[in-house]
Image (tube, rainbow, N blue to C red):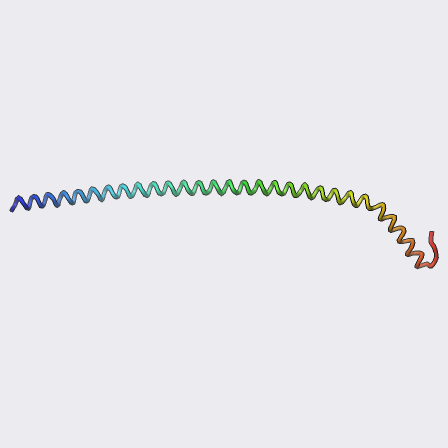
Length: 113
């Protein structure tokens, strides 16, 4: 009977020891898993930040390019309007003078030279 109890005790101790070893191995595995997940999260966050920075840089480049084009077009339009106004002034001045003469003739009631 004593021999059976000793064998039972040995099996129980062995099983407990095996359970403890398995628990320790599981803890190591879980710690390793958590470390790797942390590394993956950090890497993903860095990639996301890099992508955001690249997008912002591209957006700024496009905005600058678009502003430059708009300024060029605006400058060309202003030059065109200035030329048109310069070309129209002599004709408008002659028309204004003619119109003023006709108004004066009507007010005075006779031709004015």
